[in-house]
Length: 466
Ligand code: URP
Ligand code: ZN
Ligand code: ZN
Image 1 (cartoon, rainbow, N blue to C red):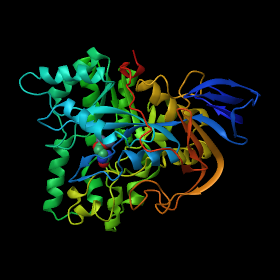
Image 2: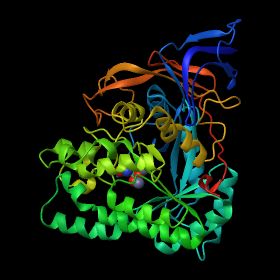
Image 3: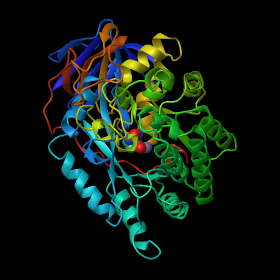
Image 4: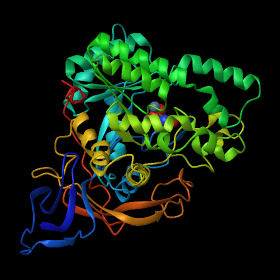
């Protein structure tokens, strides 16, 4: 089976060229001008950009959280991703306190089995190293790396559910350093935030926007500093997830300037949504934007965009953690602490980044590819992904930079009853998408089969930093 993509413009992170792309089986076989049509299936990419499929390294599919389960499972979530131009996701397996990483691994492999429409990997969120000095948990980390889980997530927030203490963080990071694994950190000081929350509730402040007010930028910046310091002590590479504001960015940049192996992502929502605009404190509907870290003031947008071009932030992910407004977010109708934290975004990442990044002159197309496709593959140990290059998996996105599209929950594939960008008009959208050589999205419609996605065993490469 071979497909020839003709007359397109190939955009990689390091080069742009006018060339045809020949796919044979699951891989890219040849890239050159005017490849003969022979008897290949032909795809006309005139006026289209031929880019690597997007990689979203931060998603939460079918995840129990906040008294409910995230609304997208591996089927709906990966279809939504693909329709938006993403061909790989890395999701989180959560170890429960008192249980094992192996149990979490088995649970998440079961959740995904027969459902994923595109390829996917897993990070392991560590909450417990077991009894005594934690030898059992540390051995499990070795097993996880052998299974292809080369990144471990540590939560400094969500006390009594996911939060770990600094000692456990040090132990996990020391082991990760030995294993060449990458440590992901949700950096927010959960203990101080819990005190602020209790004070707010005591004053009767229960509306959704108090969620945002209860989680300060200082609480995020302090934890960012601490996580990086502990990683430095352990000799580990650290990756701060969902960095949302300039106070945290300052801590990151200080560490990077000293040569510390610290990386960070931001997420689509922190670049274009704000507390002033989405959460002014006027209505219950603001629960749509209750996620963690919360939306920040608009003044953070420009510095975050700037950090994407100066290299201090290396990836844009979504932290896709979808809950329906009507019957899930509503658990916290009278108490913001009961609103399940998270927002839907897996389908819209590339549209938003292209329109507000590339069309707005903040990013060029190659930087867009670097942030959304190539850096994720490199940092998370997926050498077969992330570039339109001979020998790589034929995960290819045919992007129409002139397509006008209105984002709306009415037509989305995500399983939520709202969209965070409802009514936004964007120019630039996914037209066709190949996943390992198979056309899975045609003219914006999913045509793939459920369950065709493969579990990716990722390499342990310390975030590509060694
Ligand atoms: O609000 C969020 N972000 N929910 C998902 C879990 C996390 O903290 O990433
Ligand atoms: Zn988080
Ligand atoms: Zn998350």
